Every structure is written in structure tokens, then in C-alpha cells.
Length: 248
Image 1: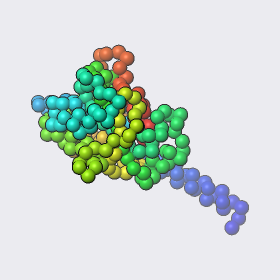
Image 2: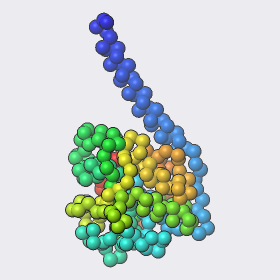
Image 3: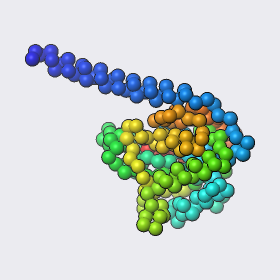
Image 4: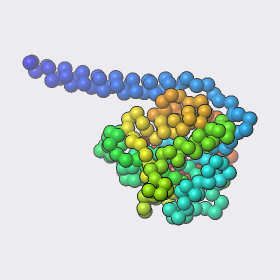
């Protein structure tokens, strides 16, 4: 073995790493081009996706749909619930990332790699939103009643319940006054991200979306943005969902 051999191995390893990243990104954004822009069905049911560009949440009316979400996620588990709360925003992500990366400056290589490893537990992050708090980073979903029910089933199937079938809160874990975390099913990894969770929900609901959505732009690529007319409402979900975005 000559002195050049270790450098050759290192070079090939780096090349393979770069090619793997290019392939990952190419597949992710190439698949996003598959569906066409959806046309809302006649019996349009209200539901949204919100995104800060990195992370996505599903947003449904608190009441008026197939589920009263205040009975699934009891207000007693939140510091407070606005009396006029109109929507519930639900996201899924890695437990360690959610709880220990409240700001981007808290992100470490160990936490990022741990989230991508698929070895950790996951949580649902649930936030109450008042009318007008969807903000400019919201996309309305083209849903009928059956699609709305499919979204609700997806969220409920992601809950890791206690022995009595109730959502289990993470005591004392909050980003603000109107949010809480609950134990969830599934493992987060490089190929199963917070955004693939959202994308899978949309496919189950019949919303046109790419077959694999590891990034937030993949999720909203074919959706119509909501025309947010209230200035300065970059959603509570959009803030730590800027926080949300860190849920990897």
C-alpha cells in the first residue's frame, strides 16, 4: 500500500457522500413534480397546511369537523386555551429535537444526527390558533368530507395512547401558553421526516402531493396558498414552527 492509498480512500468516500446528497435532493424534488395542481371539490371541507419553509403542520378546525379536538387533546394539558380558538395545528417530529432545540442556536450535530438515526421516540406538537392566526405561510387543502375524515384518522393513528386510549402529554413541555406535546407513534429518520408525515396524511386524504415529501416545499408544491390579509400574523405555528421547523 502506498502513501496515496489513504487519500484515495478519503477522496472516494467524500465523493460518495456528495453523490448521496445530490441523489437524495434530486429524488425529493424530482418526485414533487408528479401531481398536478388540485381543483377543490364541490363540498370543500376546511383544512390547511402551515409551513415556515422547513417544517409543516396540519391545521383543522377545533370543532365542526369529524372530531372535536378539544376532547382528543384536553385543554387541561395546555397552560391555556383561547376561548375563541378556531383551529388546532398538529405536527409530528423527533422527541429529542422537539424538546431540546427551542431555537436554531440550540441545534447541535449530535441532536441532528440523533434525529436522523431513527433510534429515538417521537412526539406530536399541538397548538391552538385563534381566527386570523394562520398567517401568510398557510395553504388551503382541496378536501371533501371524506378527505377531512382521513386527515383526522391520520392524526389520531399517530397518537401513542395510554391504557385507556387517551393522548399522553409530556408534562411541563411547552413553547408558549397555547401549545403542548403528546407521545406519538413512529420513528423519525432520514427518510421519514416531519414533512413525510404531513405528506402521507395528504395522500390518504386524496390531496395531490408527491410520493415522497422529505422537505416542506415538497408538501406545498401543488397547493394553493391562502390569501392572508392580516399583516403581521406569521402564525404561532410559524414561530417555533420556526420552532416547528427544528422538529426536523
